[in-house]
Structure formats: structure tokens, C-alpha cells
Image (cartoon, rainbow, N blue to C red; front, top):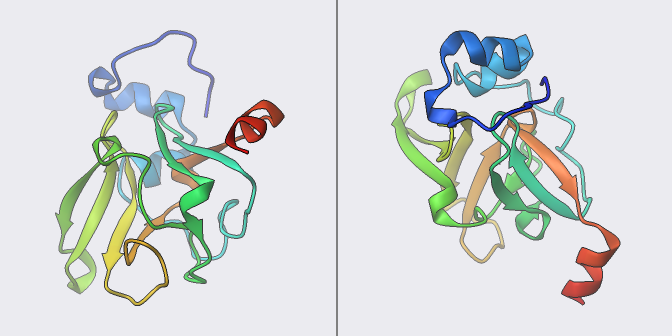
Length: 148
């Protein structure tokens, strides 16, 4: 993604501007709701401590504290940072009913959320999120010391 030099309301960005700001693959996933191939994303197996931001607008969405190994091929989280950080859309594509997860700030596609799969997590939810929809911001040593 190209660096954003000025702050713009993400909801006001035109489709042409999104095409300029994002790589073709980022645009395909974030703005056209495509899915990256399983087990190919940079954050599938990452266990780094930090926060995950929307790659399109920089909104903080998830933390490494809620990331878990679901072995599904995409990064999985059991809850967003806060419910107002994401919104949900009924998705009936691909011959099934799913719940799409989008960034509440810029309306970019992140992935889907599934419930009742039996994972040993506090919410029994799996936010199955495309790596390309996220950017990991590693925690600093000061952040880790404050959490201790």
C-alpha cells in the first residue's frame, strides 16, 4: 500500500483513489471482497505481540492477545478489539450463508466470522481474516512492560 500523506475520511475515498492507494491484490480483497488463498498470508502463523490494523485505513481492529491457531489457513481471532471497530454483513455467496466482517471505519472487507465450531476460546467465535487485509504493528518494549 502506498503511504497516506494526509488524513481523509475513508468513507469519502473514491474507488479510483482506493485503486491508487492499494496494490491490485489488496484492492481485490479489501474493496472487492475477494479471499486470499489459504496458508499464503503473512500472518497465518505469526505469533508476534502487537495490534492488527486495517491495511486500507489504519484502524486498529484486533490484538495478538485474541489471535489463536485454528489451522484454517487464515489468521484467526476470537474477538475484535471492540465491537464498534467492525461491522457485519450477511453473505450468501458461494452457496452458503456466512457473516462477512468489514472495517467499520472504511468499509473494507476483512473476512468472515464463524460461531459454534468448538474452539476453546472465550467467545467460541472465529474471526477468519485475510492477512492482506491487516497490518501488524509490533508492540514496543515499553508496551510489553506496561502490560506486565
